[in-house]
Image (cartoon, rainbow, N blue to C red; front, top):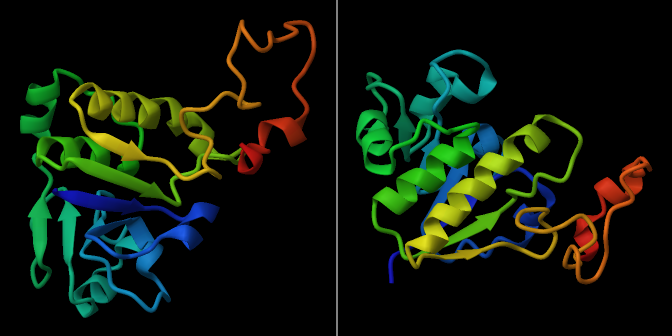
Length: 184
């Protein structure tokens, strides 16, 4: 079975077994004692520490990038082919591009460690798109493994809406509820 771990920087990254192919997102490899099989670096070169060309050249791994880079083992992201294949341009993050690429490349099982989307940062804005690509994978029969502490594909309280609970539309959701996915 063709499997891949897509590794982000969220808390569930500590559960990652590193026992299959690993793609890390952006600069997750900085200061780590492992080198991923591939780094998904779709930001433009030298747009920040995660895309520092000198550092990228020092690693002995391949990079999934927008365009070829001298001195770096690169796989150019097949953007036009993927857009045509899936008939969408809905990509809100590097994780979304990674999921689409894994589906397109024929992976049969995708593990998501550190892809938690539990904080009040830009990850909340990316969550729906990540869940969209998880759905695209599942509809093709691809198994997607999401660790317990991740907020992906879960309601905020872990219960089934309409059957187990309903939202009080007149009340504000407390912050501690919004960020408590680790328990479900």
